[in-house]
Amino acid sequence: MEAFFVNLTITSKEEILKAGRMIAQEKGLSAINMRSVAAECNIALGTLYNYYSNKDELVLAVIESIWKDIFHIKECKDDISFLDFVVFILSCLKDSKEKYPNFFVTHSMILESKVKDEAKDRMNNCFIHIKSMMLSVLENDKTIDSSCFSNSFSRDEFVSFVFSNILLAELNTFDEQALIEVIKRII
Image (tube, rainbow, N blue to C red; front, side, top):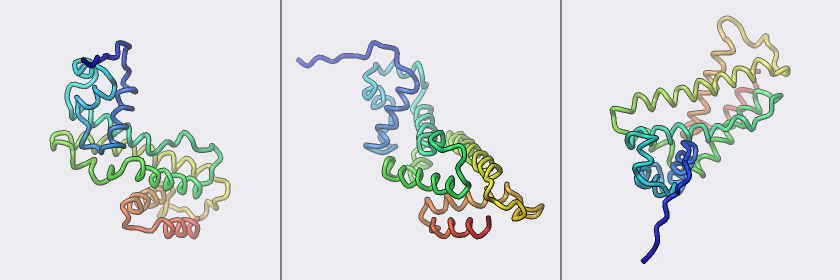
């Protein structure tokens, strides 16, 4: 008879999310459910329900955790140029395609319609944070001639344009090298 040991130590939300990310990496987002995550954490299913009341809540948290993992901006230098920061973001996205296959295509399709709005809100919050960081890097980049911006072409609009095109590049509908060249010509 094979013995089954349950993890008796207190499990943290971060450990649960890490297990969810591991499942997403190895088997895809659709493989994430309460039982698979509990098994990966080596905890009882009831313990997992102490953290997440249902599968949708768990999947939402894992998706948000994956977005944060993809954009691990904390690893970026403080004095980075705007162009280098954009290249860094593109690199993070490229790495994520290998780490989380099909994440960008499947994450919106696996959720029940009742939680899609919440998922969209969480994704948008992540994007707002990234755009805020991009704006900060742009404002602190001493190599940029501030005269390229005006009332009709603000830094905010430029960051929104660049970020939108980063997402298009990620979906393979826009060449990232063309985006880099456009940025060089503008700033």
